[in-house]
Image (cartoon, rainbow, N blue to C red; front, top):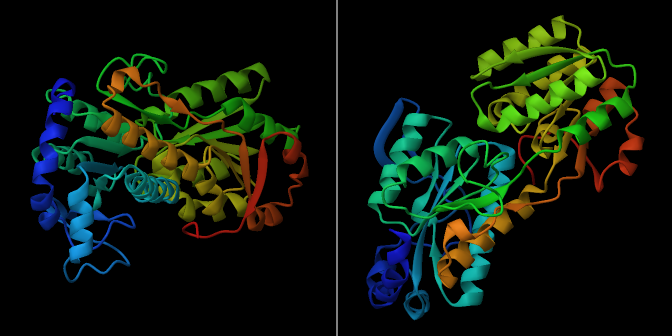
Length: 381
């Protein structure tokens, strides 16, 4: 809906809440639905629910119906770019905060029917956008830059509010005019990476580095500024740079093999979703070659990289939920809500990989706001 009609529409919603409550799928929102458009055989226009670990049988109790009828219901479309540990963290924290804010404010944020995963497929993301717009959601919350760009374009005509999460460079991606004054129907939270801080850690652990590998997806907007910053850092130190890119898991595996063959001293990856999804398949290649992999999120370290550096993604998801609640319940316009950026000073070291590499990382503790240790796993507990 258009921003100028938002308040009028909210006034009419309350009278239709009982009808809406009957249509909501069974179960009180308490987790993150894994609704997906399409499947292994390719995208379709049908939404299929995959609410993992949740009981979707039965109907709402009269008490639940009465509670829903007491307050306004807002439809929140959540669009996760791809299934990976960091984005999953954001999604869970976002849902939890919407539940908490709903209870606090006496409203319902209905996301269960509209929590979708694009599976890193642009066609599928486009279909999701159209589906959400046809459902007349009150806000779209894309998680990660590729999803945000597609949702922004799809929502342009209707000016349906878009509150993105985990966009590394909102201005560079063309989502907002500036971080302070977004200036349109789009705002959100940023996980902008301090690339210099990552390289400072890298050279503190090994001052004799002569060749650095850059591993990323060239088509991801989130990687561009960090890669440019990495090149500038290395040029200043007269360090050789070897670039390898990939857009699929197989291409990333080949790129990792190539960097190992080049005998680089370390590898850097920004907050790149493509590399993140492939990390479990490449971390052993680097470890066996004696090459530490530094990356722009703790999920990389969870999946085997030596060190992940960046923001707390649970806090980022919570901040995104706060922005959504503020936008919908206080009648604010997205263009007047500054983009929220968290301090990023958390270094997460994979102790399994550190032991395999024989790296002393004790000096990291004095170089960042927090030093965490983690062991290899697929998902955060």
